[in-house]
Image (tube, one colour):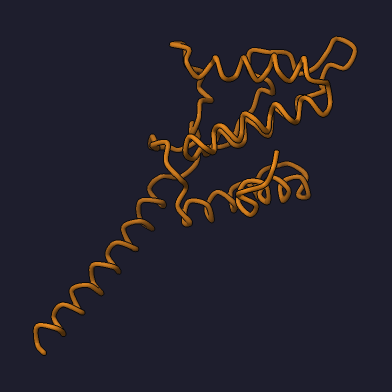
Length: 164
């Protein structure tokens, strides 16, 4: 019986220590201030409509800010493509999407690469629930329309299986 009680106490302490270490690591790895330049190294729209798809690129930049795993990156790039297609057509969407995907393999890295926003480098891995909660708080603090931010949060944290 004494061994069973010792084992239960040990397991309880181990689980508590594990939860505390995840919380501490999240606190130690905060997000830098969000920055965007619109469509990095590309135009934000056509000559007649200069900012036509800039909002698509800003959302893409916001998602790259905190990252996640490879599936998240792929979905984010596809979402950019769908957004541009909606406002400018398939040709522009394919051009931008191809450029973004090619950029992943470029030896020249932009400072706003996937997961660039963390103060300590973060692996391409699924976001923990603590990270997700923290990111949602930070997104809500951004100086953008609150309705747009809530839609962004819903797309990225609530509806994980949503179509693009």
